[in-house]
Image (cartoon, rainbow, N blue to C red; front, side, top):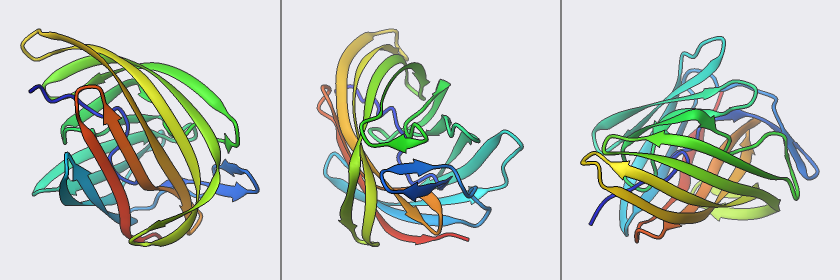
Length: 211
């Protein structure tokens, strides 16, 4: 069976944000030393995933994801917080997103919809993805780290690409992300995901220490 990918970030990239009513907007930047831990379940196998923000640049927020003795580099554009590299959720590969993945879509507002097309390059594949996202509502979500008021963002996507051997593939994906504010910073507290290749993945926040 081929292993494909999840087009969004696997861990809680810690992003600036502030929630007012049904809106979530930029506020505080990720700081070096901000940390989060998750239970990441890939095809029914749970693993611990740790994230830590590192020194960034004038244009980007940088972070590292650690799982199973391996480190993955992550980066997102400041302001828009467009994801440009991270670990793919559905296969644990280092992935790059061009021109980037707007998976948060700030400012988040109830009912906001956006569509995007981007290229994902992993270690064993390259694919073009067209993804539709919708910010549904704020709701309470309980995870091992506690109970959070989180913005629910659902998504669905169409995938078309080739693997490292040149074999073409195409399929669909769907899932949901929940974003919450922790010490004024937006974090993914929960994700559920599946695709038409038979892959399933989820993550839940177990601990967070933000400056």
